[in-house]
Image (cartoon, rainbow, N blue to C red; front, side, top):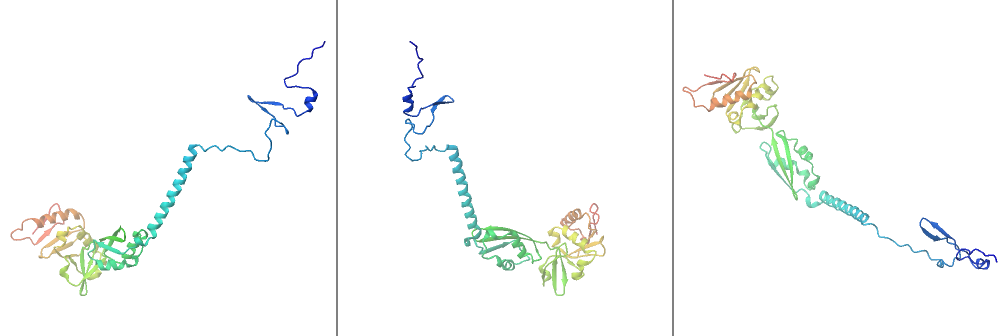
Length: 289
């Protein structure tokens, strides 16, 4: 009797094969899956509904990054809104101006010049606007602007320093070391500065710069005691005190040393008889006579 080798498990007769489709195993990697064959009784029935997909939560790192981005956007929007409020809010509109440091320019003149800024929110007021509005006053050299919330502005004025006066008809004009006319007064006695002879045209003379340099180097204690300043040449600047004493300065060189020597001479006990002339043209060897 011939023996037939047994077939593989699950193998049947031809009638079994005809009874339904065969399931063929497929090896992928280390796992075995079955081919999806239409009509396979081992597969779940196709009811026309889409297969459900399990949604896995996002990793914590991605959630933190998303939350951080949203927080930054919210902060930017908040800061933008706050900035817009500060710039355009009528609550910060300028209502008062405080002026200090002024002597030659009156407070009323300065505040009146700044009237166009009233009602403007403080954040919109630039230093340049204030400087431009006050630029028409010759005595003003510079200004410092600071806001005083919620609606005030503080202006500190730095004025040019007058060193002498010139006579123009019945008025006396204050000038600085550059010959700039700063202000005018009618009473000579209210200004304790030396008078430069020659009227307002004296600033155009060749000796004016030498006189101005000397006067600029003098301390206020001496400058206020001077009555006149003159020079026949740039090397012969001469000053006179209100008590008729004369100071021969010479050229506008070594001004600081000469000023120190002159201050010491005027502070010393008066001689007997009092000196009429102080010659400091050579500061290392001053002479009195």
